Amino acid sequence: MAIISRGFSGRGSAGDKKLPPGQYVTTDFPVLSAGPTPRIPLDQWELTIDDGKNVLRRWDWKSFRDLPTETITVDIHCVTHWSKLGTSWEGVSLDTLLEDIETDASHALVHSYGGYTTNLPLPDLQNMQAWIAFRFEHEELAPEHGGPARLLVPHLYLWKSAKWVHGITLMRQDTPGFWERLGYHNYGDPWREQRYWGD
Amino acid sequence: MWHVGKVTALHKETATARTIILEVADWPGHVAGQHVDVRLTAADGYSAVRSYSIASGPNSEGRVELTVELLPNGEVSPYLSQELTVGDRLELRGPIGGWFVWRTHQTEPIQLVAGGSGIVPLMSMIRSGTSARSAASFRLLYSVREPAAVFYSDELQELTINEGLSLTYAYTRVAPKGWPRPPGRIDTTLITDATWPSNLRPTCYVCGPTSFVEIAAGLLIASGHSPEMVRTERFGPTGDRK
Image 1 (cartoon, one colour):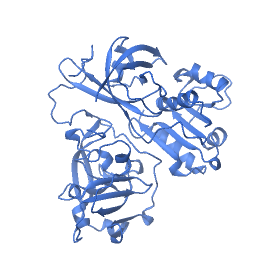
Image 2 (image 1 turned 90 degrees about the vertical axis):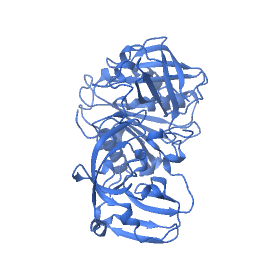
Image 3 (image 1 turned 180 degrees about the horizontal axis):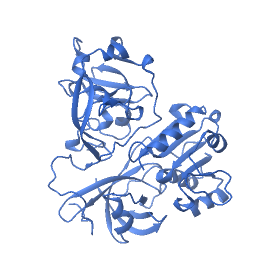
Image 4 (image 1 turned 180 degrees about the vertical axis):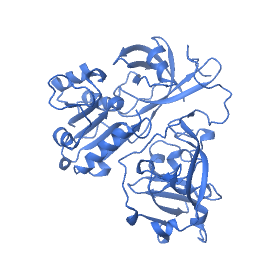
């Protein structure tokens, strides 16, 4: 049973349904990163999919941008409690990137420029649930928000949507990523409020 | 999972910020740099949660100090910075975070760079180093709007005199009379003059508003620090809207 905060009324009401528990709406776009923002020139940018041994697919910026793209409008939820509603992105679906790859992998470890990693069950990257996004609100994605391109997995807390994405390793077992080793939940479903270890 | 903290004291830091001292009976202890989630609940059951850095160093008394700055149009910070009184109880979750932390076994030089209220977790690190009698040498570059906006100013001054803390203020709007550097953003000269050189391999902790952290981390890297030695914590909105 929560303690009532004497004299606190807040902005919302207990009946608000659109937000996952413990979240509030912001119209800003806060930035959370563990380190400095890497700057990746487009002519050096590369995205790969590998199986831990061999690179299965490789794109440079041009071949990546030649792939069919989708426009997505989604709510995003950060573990630090803010949510941003109705954000608009353009990106390439992971279904497109994973097409024709035969794999018995159950999980994926996503790598970023700068060394960041995050892990997800492979099915969470499939079936129109995940994109490599390069445009936000009709503009090129800014470096501090993960540009040139970031993963976008809006049904999970935003730390799973790795900025400055560089590669995806398909794995037959799960292995925790950067924040997942440092106290954050392994899966991170905002609707079940899976923020930290033990949630 | 949610701890209950009792407010035992409140200190005004500046015109818009104050420190809340909480006694948390079942506090598991924390490491310098970690944060907590604070939950407020209204009489109708509506609740709001925000994250705040811990200002106090690790201690065995279950004491958790938060310094909260009033944000314009904030939902939780007005309550914490103005309404809350001694004897009230607050719900806390944590401690949280295992990256932006300083642990007492670290002996390398430490470079702290604070922008505004980004000083809070860095103060926890300084306090932790002092109470552990750490061999690590701390340098703090503290960028702040004006002298009146400095948090913990008496304690910081005391630490420079008695504990060998190296402290440089960088004022962005108003500097004290006769201050050698005109008010302005931090720049290459200041980084060169006031921070550990990169060849000593210091771990750098940069905390503040996003725009500040982007600039400060960029300057550190440009002056030779390797990116993996620069840890950052950003808060507030993106961009330069003020």
